[in-house]
Length: 194
Image 1 (cartoon, rainbow, N blue to C red):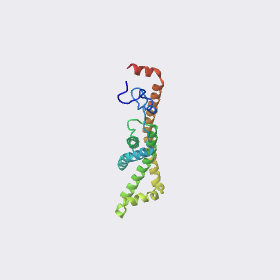
Image 2: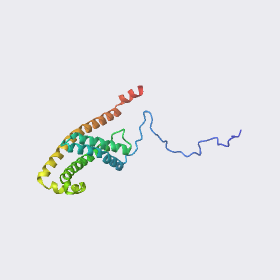
Image 3: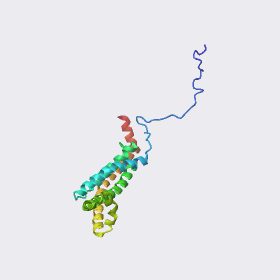
Image 4: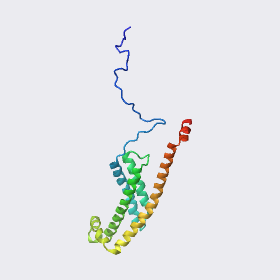
């Protein structure tokens, strides 16, 4: 009897063979999207501006707060995750980027805070904030202004980095635990039994 649909008796003979595509699944490896580092840095920078605002606010109250640097770090790390679509999982790149952005932005926040004080002191002379911002290096050349600037900056870095160190320690502790769980066959057997 002839095949009614004019199909060959060997249906797989003319179909090109391709590699199977695996999209993950229960118990299988996940395919992770590549991080776009440029977007991550942009996101970290933009979100860290919230921390700069917090730092500026505390500085206007004559209070150097390490928590503002820690907030800056958390926001930068979150911004990195949002822009790279890895917000649910903290990565090494997000940690490094957040630390570097925080170090830079603490300096920026300190500089802006000092520029604002200069502006407040001399605004009666008709200068703008931008004039004060540009003139800040000339003011910082004076030892009486540079010493407190560096002192405040040092305290900000010290307390911020102490707060950040806890996050970094917990991150690497969690990574080590995840790696141990993957390499431990007993864990895999327990997962299968559940």
